[in-house]
Amino acid sequence: MKFPIKVIYVCGSISAATVEQRDMNIQKGKDVGFAIWHLGAMPLVPHMNSMGMFQAGVTAEAIYLGDLALVSKCDAMYLMEGWESSFGCNLEVAWAKHKNIPIFNSFDALEAYVCSQALHFYQKEKH
Image (tube, rainbow, N blue to C red):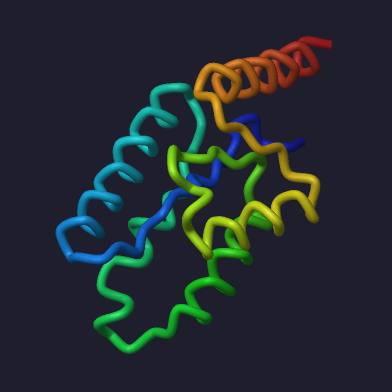
């Protein structure tokens, strides 16, 4: 039996010209993650994984590869506003498409997906 909760990858820009802008991007990712929790899904927010990584000497390439591995484990992807300007996000979207992972750029569409998947699971369990 497959567990009914869906894991949603939050795809949004992290890097920025200043530390303040980067921190703002991280906060936006956290906010989206909380909203996904409220839908009844499990958010995977790479913004939270990368805090302090550059200062620790982890290369951007290593982070990109790790993020692609995480995308592969998700049921769907949510695109935050402005994702198009991020090199990493473009890699993640291409990888999700390659893996046939559903991609959503509308929160309403994501909500409908999460709800329909949960309903489908529970209907199967009743029979």
